Amino acid sequence: MIDPIATPRSFSASPPLRGQIAIPGDKSISHRALMFSALAVGTSRVTGLLEGHDVLATAAAMRAMGAHIERGASGEWRIDGVGVGGLLQPQAALDMGNSGTSTRLLMGLVASHPITATFIGDASLSGRPMGRVIDPLSQMGADISASPGANGTQTLPLMVRGMAPAIPLSYRLPMASAQVKSAVLLAGLNTPGITEVIEPVATRDHSERMLRGFGADLSVEIDADGARHIRIRGEAELKPQTIEVPGDPSSAAFFIVAALLVPGSDVTIANVGLNPTRAGLVEVLRAMGGDIELVDARDVGGEPVADLRVRHSSLSGIDVDPAVAPSMIDEFPILFIAAALAEGRTVMTGLDELRVKESDRIAVMATGLQAIGARVTETEDGMIIDGTGGAPLPGGATVAGHLDHRICMSFAIAGLVSKDAVTIDDMTPVGTSFPNFETLLTELTP
Ligand code: S3P
Image (cartoon, rainbow, N blue to C red; front, side, top):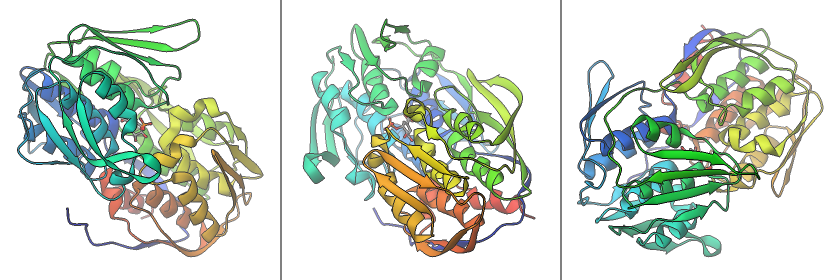
């Protein structure tokens, strides 16, 4: 794979952000819409699909395994599926780019099909731990050879030799991960009998919701300890669906925080997904004093959605309850920026999973925030931030994005509330999840 040329960009003190924007479709839901449609028998239609590099990597992989996927001129995607059990042997390595979700979920699918697939990716993805999916999928019978990574981890490039029929499993998740949960459930789709995932801490439940929508026999039971037992009956027949993908709350997050921080701002973000397993940031920012109003709360494609009206607010530091972390795991980088402008101290703990995202988001954010003059202390599993009380950050530095879209966008927003410009060394990673990020920013500051 050839790395694109780095595009450095500078962001500086912004006038008030005003107006209404619609953000692109949810990344997690878009991946699943393509994968499940590709496994249904017949034609599914998807609107609002996120057309970022990560989701396009999933589309290319499903095509390579036999699905027919095309985008109509109106932006509607049509997918003709191969049926559960019908995935074909891909003729070349599957290039996952930067996308952990594509990799881990597709490894699950391949694991219970009689095919062999090689997974490759960019430098960021090739450093991420895959043992967390290799363990359960191997127990189901898949034969997986991975590359040795740092500190004994197993990484890409790797090869999955699927086992059909695979062996059903009851698997208790050792970490809060929707990707691992989904990988096992997807392997279970083509496995005889019942495959169970036990989730002590709830993570995003898009797989469960959408698999049910496609007609899979899937149940969720909560035990006395509050753990979720998700059971799927294998050798399922999925029925084609029409899916409307709601806007991505993880993309909305950057504009929510920008509107809260830039004085005089008043922004409405239309069509934001507010699934309770994703909406932790709104809760936390409100607890910090953020003025976020939910307008026209409704249901889109089985997911709760609302328009969000966000006005500039004076924020106060808080101790963030670690229990909300899974429902906002991708939003911590931008919450760190909000905390850096709040009055007083914000303490965040229980964030170990942030160290194995597209970058080590605790270390990378701490380094960048220090470079632009914020007062932050990195801890083993979190961050302590003493905010400016609303005063601009000094800025005036170049920050490394480490091939991590959310790091790049977080520091872009920091630039809007800094005295001197903040430069991000390379903004190209933003295309993985939010290709029109800069366009929307410009629209709000005419
Ligand atoms: C995702 C799950 C989360 C999240 C990622 C998308 C998904 O990862 O960080 O951006 O779509 O299932 P983990 O499962 O590693 O927590």
